[in-house]
Image (cartoon, rainbow, N blue to C red; front, side, top):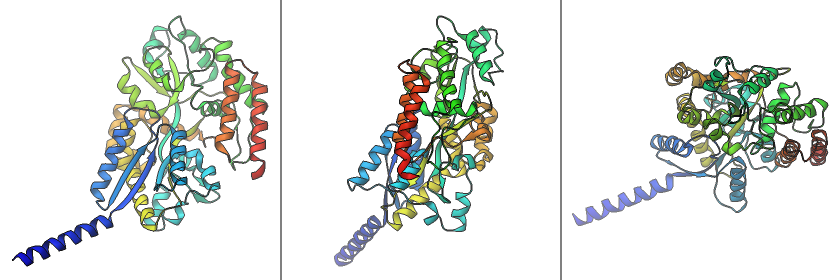
Length: 419
């Protein structure tokens, strides 16, 4: 009897050891940059995944904004720490490819079901992902810029609360009606991600700021210079926006406190605004000039090169779980980020939610006029030059033409090796 118990114990121990060894460990770096309590939302999705996949253990490392996440994830890889996947900027793809850090998904998504999954996302969200015929990123935390507006302040100014501006001229006219000693008519953030807002304005003015192959920028183009002059005029000439820079990180709170009647911001703030607003608010597509338009934005899943076949299979399973229609719908409802596939909007949950709260469709609908977010080789350094140019013009340190000319010259130098 004693021998049987010892043997049984030994078998149980061996089985436990085998099970422990069979478990695949995944480390995922994840940005928490905007919106509400996203950490809890992601933790919940990961917990559900682990229940369905007890042989996979996922450690999520939250890393601040997108830039912080890229730095932390790449530093971990450089120091030999284990990391299999991350959600990073969709626009990081060129740099990650150049450094040979990521794997194209065609190498791991090889079954018919996998290929169907790769083709299930909105094409506009794949524009930053598909480079030279291969897919390098999977959309997840994705957005467009939308216009939030305070309907109560519209009513008080004698404006139709169901008719937000659809053109630049209307935006200026309404902005003047909404501006008083306590409230600005409009705030467009110029810290954090100024290039993103500027790209939206440039698109609306009829000009892209970069080529589709990541090799050329058009910062000193006459139309692009006019775009920065227009942004500056919103404060200096028209007086509907504060002079200087507008902080990305505090703008949502400024809107909720009535300091501005309209703000441009990520749709990733939608649920936080919904939960925090003490007034009637609306959400609209951005106004246009020559055309309507917004760049897409946000983060993609990336799969790192230094991973085993087992880890790649587990990471692919996690990504497919997190982007599945039901999960994408729940994610959109919880955060305000868009569902990344048409199938997400066919789920009962998201159908019911948008029927109750139509603003949840605005970012998705804007994809019809959306373009790929600004991305080039040497993206971070080229982008930093553009950001500095925008801010120096808005603060009056330099004239728009001079600032953008310097940014263009720097971009040409940085991209010359890739021509």
